[in-house]
Image (cartoon, rainbow, N blue to C red; front, side):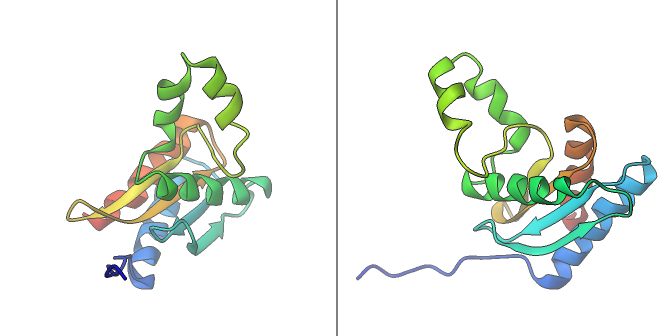
Length: 140
């Protein structure tokens, strides 16, 4: 049997720091958003729905974090550029449950290693990506 390597993941305290930074940035730009911080397998560690954020955005934020984690840290905003010129892929892969191909999901890395993901939903794809980046940048 092959040796299994332990998966590095962010701690609850670190996930709180990421979530708090994302919420603070969303507040600073006047956005009511949903934020999910997930482990490297895409399972949520923390999630928050800011006052006034759309209810549906909570699931979208979770799906964005899951998408990033499921594809080794590929940000959700990168997907369209990768598939737009391949009609079969556009029409096929976009039917994959939970896969989200617009901005708002980014990797959380420590020393270059994927340790989690953050998904944000509630604004435009650009706003969501900006808020997610602010959260991920809290790791410094």
